Length: 96
Image (cartoon, rainbow, N blue to C red; front, side, top):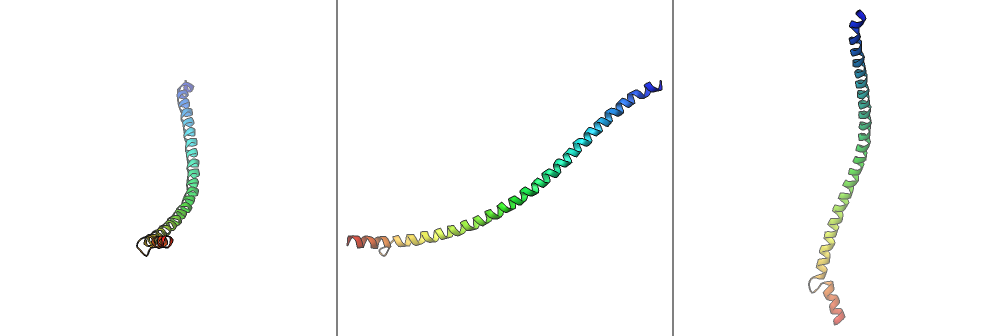
């Protein structure tokens, strides 16, 4: 009779051990995945910093180009307008 009284307990113990083993394997997998993702994030973060530096440089260059464009646009406007403007003077030379 003692063998029959421990039988359900042994079966329950085997189920719990299997469940524990499965849980440990899942946790181990998750830890490994977390480490991989953290390393991947570090690599991507370094790449992003490089891209942000390049973007900042391009923005500064764009700002300088816009200032130069506005300056040239103003000079061009002054040359075309008025009796002393280049276009007016050129037309006078041609048709004089």
